[in-house]
Image (cartoon, helix red, strand yellow):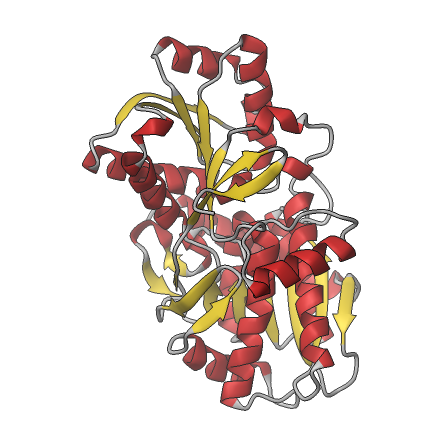
Length: 399
């Protein structure tokens, strides 16, 4: 029987784990309690490389939350965060390091492809995991193409890719002032981008949106977008939907500016981080819209405090939604641990049973949503917010 591509990749990466597990050495960035009384939380993400903006934001916010939880007394956490450079095989190696360390709970991975590679391992080893930002269905389902056969112990704090595609099409239908002739540029070899696009396409059709052009790219041609931009311009597109990460998006904005082409650009959570991309002229992002669960300029007490503390920790950097989701992950784990009576002397398997039961039944209030719930499959239910980049900052549209 022919195996699907995602299954072949998972099997090959799992085999790589068997070879790398014995070579994994303990290390990485750790924070929080170090004694036997601390529940060990593991995670991996890109701390170096093109996606490092995401990983460093998640790491910093998770460290903040761990320190705050520990300062309250009682429940104590220790955090070990490994660099996987947004690479599936390195995520497998990082998993081995974390397991050898004694990981009992996990923030899984920051990005989707590494998350899809290690999700079967969390399932096999019965370790509860909740990813702050890995949005692919392949992280929570063994059969992501049909959203079937959930792992059951791997959860998401972020929106799934299909939900982002649907929400974007609905938002554009409700706001025709942003543009009525829509072009799409997406990455066809990336689960994140293609997953969002697939649902956007069907929902755009249901909403009678006028999609006048669709362009794609992959790793082999991810530096020159002039052909796609010229075709979108020739098709009369006054809005370009970009379900992609910030790195290629920055090139698209730069090249569109060089062409004198100025449509409205609309992205999703992968665009969050573009303002901190080294070497990018952030003035080119003025007026860019994106859907995100978090807006740093919100005036509620929790957001105000988090933003101030994050900026103090990160030399004035404004937190993005990846940071906010990570912060919420740690606090949601803390809520579930306290409700279930989890202690550090429990096995990872026993903790997994308790946290799975809590997450599939509890309600959580955090930075990225109020009355947040999860299905038994691990999908989160919360509402997205629209933000626009104005004067070099993310500003909530509804604020």
